[in-house]
Image 1 (cartoon, rainbow, N blue to C red):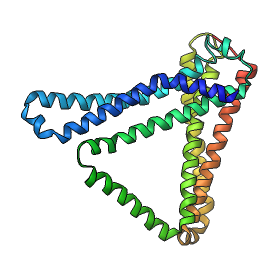
Image 2: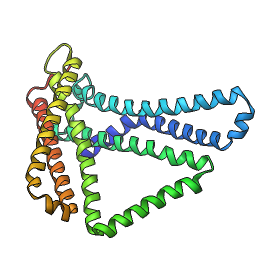
Image 3: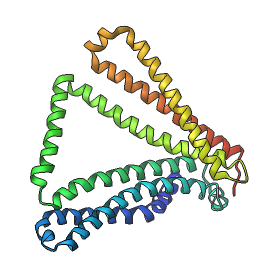
Image 4: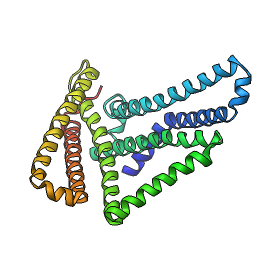
Length: 274
C-alpha cells in the first residue's frame, strides 16, 4: 500500500511543481540566449534592456516560487490530505498510519531534492545557451575533478568515499527531519478547534528553537570530549571529521525519530479531523 500512496503523492505534487520546473528551465534558456545575442539586444535600445530586466525578474520569481510552493505543498499534503476534509477518505484506505506518514515524508524529500536539482541545473543551462559553455562549464567541472583528486591523494580514496556518503546521509536525514518536524507541528496544532494554523506555526518555531539548543549542546560536548586530544586531531584530521559527521548523523536521526513518534501517536490516539 505504501507504493500506491507514494504514486498518489508524487502525482499530486507533480501537477503543481512540474509546470514550474518547465517554466524555470525555459526562462533560463531564454536568459542564456539573450546573453548570447547581447550585441543584437543592445542595438534595440531601451526595449532590449527592458526585456532583459524582465527575463531576469521572471527567472528570480520562478526560483522563489518553486521554493515557496515546495514548502506549501509539503504542508498542504499533510494538513489537508490527512487532517482536513480529505482525511475522512484517506484514513479509510487499507493503509497504516505509518504508511501514510512515510509516503508524505518520502514524497517531501524527493520533491525537495528535485527542486534543488532543477534550480542548480539552470546555471549550466544559462551558460550552455549563452555560448560560453566551453570556457565556463568545462572549467568548473575540471576544477571540481581536480579538487576531488587532490583530496583523494591527501586522505585516501576510501576516506573520501566515506565522507561523501556521510554528507549524503546527513542531507537525507535532514530532509526527513524537516518534513517530520512540519508534520509534528501540524499534528499538535490540530489538537485545538480554532487557530490551528497559528498554533502549528508556534509549535514549529518552538521545535526549531529546542532543536537548535540541543544541537549546540551536543556540538559543544562533542568538541569538549574530542578536545582532550588536540594533537591526535591534527595528526588524524580525517578521523576527527568522520567522528563529527557521525555525531551529526546520529543526532539528526534521533530528532527525526522523535518527530515521527509525536506525529504517529497524535494521529493514532488523538486524531482530530477538521
